Length: 163
Image (cartoon, rainbow, N blue to C red):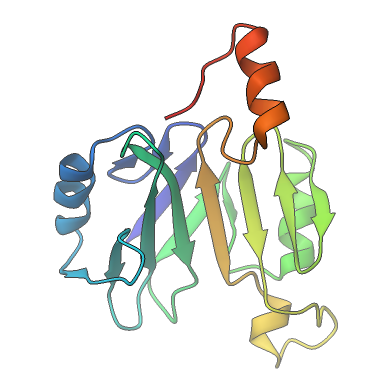
């Protein structure tokens, strides 16, 4: 299957701001749900894309994380296959559309609330897939990364309080 990241709306049938029941029903269209320790929703299709859905304080979907499939499924943003291309090539192509900030083992696009992660950087070795390719992408709602000061400033400026 092909999935398109659509910040700040969502990905595939999952939309930020959905209720738990809506998210559960959306994920169920893709396969059987998996139990998790932290109460979020998860879908693990062996060999395919894995999904994890997190909830904010109001119990609405505030983040969706996708994990690199072994085969068949693709995830793209503006035509860039975020798991199928080498990490540095993904960064180069995405920088045409947005600002990317380097973090420990990944990159964040703060304007999109999109985060790309890999367990370590081994950019020069294609045989080392876990570092050569991104292993997960997180799409979040506005305010997801805010601390108390940022949340207060967002509210003071008339922005949405988040979910």
